[in-house]
Amino acid sequence: MTNDEEHLVAMDIPINERDTQYPLPMQGSYVDDDDMGFYKYKTFKDKHELISLLKLASVKKYQRFKPVKNSKDVYCVRCVDPADVIGPYIHQRFLNGKGPSTKEIRNITQDEIGCKISYWKSWKASEIAKAIIRGTPAHSYTVLDAYNYMLRTVNEGSKTSLKIDDKERFKYFFVSYRSWIRGFVHMRKVLAVDRTFLRGLYEEVLLSVVAQDTKNHIFHVSFCVVDKECDASYEYFFEKLLDIVPNTTELCIIFYRHPSIRKMVSKIYSEAHHGCCTRHLAENARNEFHCMDFLGHFYHATKAYRRDVFNDHFEEIRYINAEIADYLENVGFHKWSRAYFPGNRSTIIIAVVGTTATVVPTTAAVVGQLETVVPATDCWKPAVVCIQILKNFGFYISEREFPITALFDAISRRWSEIFHEWRMSYVNLTTIFVPSAENKIMTNKNLGNKLLVHRIDEDMFTITWESGVSMVDPRRKTCSCRESDLDKIPYSHAMAALRSKFGDEYGNMIYEYSSSYYKVESYVLAYVDPIFPVPAEEFWNAPPEILPRRVPPPEKKTKWGRKQMKRVPGVAAEISKKNFKNCSLCRRFGHKKTTCPTKRDGDVGTSRGIGS
Image (cartoon, rainbow, N blue to C red; front, side, top):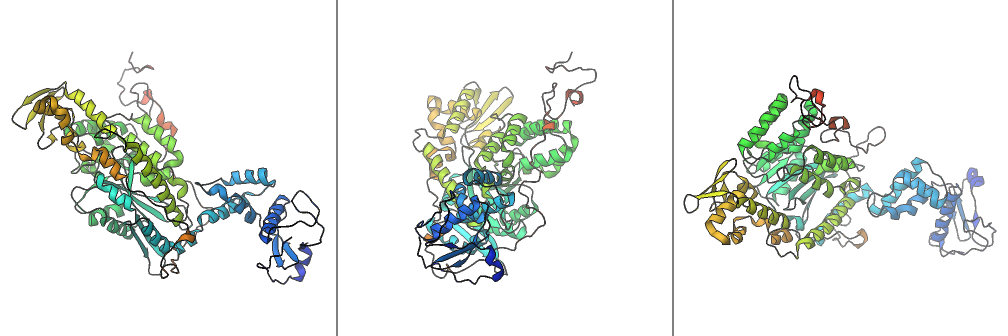
C-alpha cells in the first residue's frame, strides 16, 4: 500500500458523476485478482506505480480512468483517453528515427497489451510518444535561444544566428558548425544551393549549401531554417554565408532556377560564377515537352570538356527535338554546360539536396532510372553523383517532421558519425592521393604511353592522338583538350608531355602538377574536426539572462483537411513506367520501334535492332 501525500489532490466530486466513479480503497478493501495485478492487501512502491498499473489495466479491460479525488486513504478515478497510456508505453521505440507507424502501433497494442484501439487513438499515442522523446514543436522554439547558446558552446567556432520578426516571433535560424567551416577550406570552391520543406506543425523551409569531396561525398557548409521561401529569407541566408565563404572569382555556385536564389546570389555573390542545376533543367524539359530521348545526349553535353564535343551532342538533341534545343539554348549554354561555363563546375552539376529529401520515398526507383537511362561510366558522372547524394541524404526524410531542436540534434549526431567514418577510412593510407585519384593517374599514364609526343620548346608539346592534335603546356598546367585544366590532374595528353620532359622520373612529378585537393592529407584534414551534440536540456548551463528568454513560434498555417505527408509529383518526380519502354531498334527508352525517330522509310526492325 502507499502512503504518499506529496501528490494529494483536493477536488470536489460533482453529484452527477458519483455513480460513474470507482473508488479504490488503498487499505482494507477487497479487489478481485483478475490478471491485472490487483488483489487484496496489495502493496505498491509509491503512488506513481499504482497509477501506472491502473492505467495499464484500464487499457487491457477497455476501461478508461482519470483521477478525480486523491487522499491518504482513497484514490478515485474516472474515464481517461487510452492514448495517454499507450504513448508512454511505446515511447522507447521512437528513440532512433521515425518510429513505428500508426498501423504498427495498433498491432503492438493488440499483441502486447491485449486491446484494440482505433486509428485515431493510435496516431494520438504516437504524437504523445514523440513529444516525450523530442519535445513539442512549440517548446523547441521556446528554448531555441538557449539551444543556440549551447550549440556555440559545445562547438566552439561555429557560426549561428537567430532572428525574430516584428512580432517577436521566430523568423530565421542559421547554423554552420566549426567542422564544416574548417573542412570547406580543403574542398573545391563549388557550392550547390537548394531547399526542402519541413513537415512540422509550422511548415518551415530548410535551406542548405553543400560542397563535394574527392569521393563525390556531400560535404555540408551550412543550414538555415526559415519561415518561408522568399527574397528576404535567401538574402538573410546568403549574408550569413558570406561570413564563411568569401565572394571571389574562384567560387562557383550551382542552384535550381528559383527566382529568389538567382536574384540574391547575383546581389551578394556578384564575383562568383553562377550556374543552374542540370538535373532540374533536364526534368523541366522532359516534363514540358514529354520527351526523354534527349537525356543521354544532354548529360554528355553537360560533361563535355571541349566545345566541339558539346556541339556534336547538342546537334543530336536538336535532331531529336528542336523545341528542347531551343529551350536549352534560351537558358544559356554558360549556365549548364561545362564547355561554356566561365568557371569550373567540377563534377557538381546537380543541386539536389532538397530534391533528394523529397524523392527519397522512391529512392530505389530514381537510382534505377539513372542507372538505366545512362550508364555511370567515366565519361558520365551525374548518375554516380546523384546516386551518392540519394544514399547520403536518405536519413533526412524522417527528420523533416522533427521539432527544430531535435532536427539539428539529428543532423549533428548523424554527421558526427559520418565524419569519424570517412576520416578513419583514409587516415592509415600510405598513398599520396586518394584511391580514386590514384586509379585515374594510373589509367591516364597507360593511355599517355600510347601517344606520340613532339616537343616544340622547353615547355610546349604537341600530342598526336586518334581525334587530332593537342597542345600541352606543363608549366601553366594547361592542355587544349581542357581536361587537365578543369580536373586539376594530368590527363593522358599531359602524362605524355611529362614523360617526354622528365623521362623515367616523371612518375614522381605527376603529383606536383596535380591539385592538392586530391591528397589524402587534405581529405583527412577536411574531416578531422568532430561535431559535438548539444546535451539534454536539463544539463544546459546557459547564462541566467538567456535561460528565461522565450522565442514564440511562427504563426501556424492552418489548413483544411488532413495534413499531406506525401510529396505531390512534379519536377524530379518518379518517371512513370510507361516511359521505360525499350525500343528494339535504337535501344533507347520512351518509345517503341514503330515510332522510333531513327527508323527510315522501308526499314523493318527486328528484335536485335537489325534491319531486314
